[in-house]
Image (tube, rainbow, N blue to C red):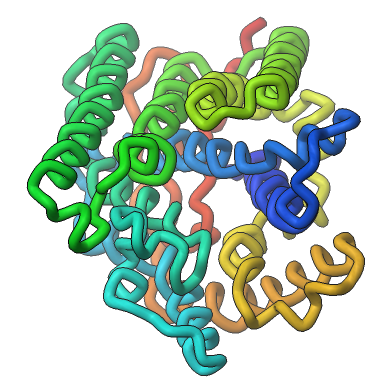
Length: 382
């Protein structure tokens, strides 16, 4: 038996919408926020933080058991990750090339997240995919280490050391690029704030937060409604407080520091939403919201491409709906057919995970594109 956390699928739609309205409301008219809605749109870039925390959480749940039982098939893992990122990306990249947008090697290799000179070329916001791509490569190694840490305390400490260590590595790499002249000549990692706010090295903390939340969830399952409601309130109030502080202190460094705090609250929110009976979980599990979540990758990619610019003068809500319609075409014509073509349907033998309370179901290869799974037959504790 296997289930999906539908609320977390829908949460991706929330993250993509935050980024969308930041781009097409605040950046079109960058004036100080006068109310709560404007403050959210002014800081909608926190949707990127939410996406990365979600990735850390969901991919840890998806692959922990495979690594633990030493049955992770690397070829299958890489194939799934490639199919997750590249088909829609390359279709859109080809589309904008046909419209006359100049491309470069960083666009083709999806490495623009390492180059200050190229990070907004091609598909403009795909710099974040560089960070996601890097996380895919290091995840199995991280899980191998975490499994050997045995306790949650040691696992959390290992993730903290990893995240902070990667940040230091990124800053040292920037120092080397600046001092050697590599950064000036090729635009490679030649700005400290760029390293902090645009690269994998700066976002390892977000991935680590999601992974810690997943480890906690694997060990004890979802809380009951009362505790999950409290966690939801704490997370939403915390995010709101960070947004308020970002409007008061909009300088780049303060905002980046507050975004780390936002990521912590995002981790708490994600954990709370694993409670199926929580009102917000039930609301987000409504099928139209879940469907928008499945379209969210396409929406995130397509929103800043010339492919949808013919809609740019529409009212923003109509533009948002139009971009989702375009994303639906991308999902049904590219993402789903590619997944079905390259991922063979098979029924694996059931795998039981030795954990204190729950038994984790091993997902089948028929899993949806987002691979969102959670423990089943779970005892819910208050």
